Length: 153
Image 1 (cartoon, rainbow, N blue to C red):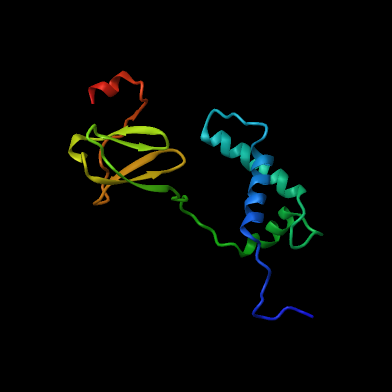
Image 2 (cartoon, rainbow, N blue to C red):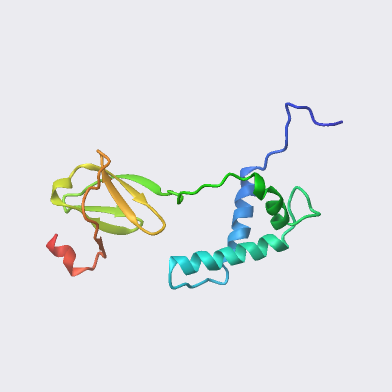
């Protein structure tokens, strides 16, 4: 008996997707890789992804590799000319000591921002802190808890 239109294609349960992400993470990041810059890291990871895609059979068509399927689909993909503006956003309030926390780091802001709500945008290469009115909340200065400069803020 065939599938009906309402059944559609079988979806992958969340556990299977998480497992596949974990397997791919193991293949790409072990042994632990070290790089001098984000550019070097991106180039190294791209090389590893291409090697993996050229060797891995495609899950829907086992007669072709993931790379072969990508090359066949590439002419139909839409080009995106602008850089990807992806970030992790987190709401926060500026403390009485002019600090906000993000990713286990503290960032210093201007005293005028004390008590005000801000939104922290964590990009791959920088942190941007915006006040409620979408303008930068102040000069950013990463501080370590043991940093003596922290006592002067």
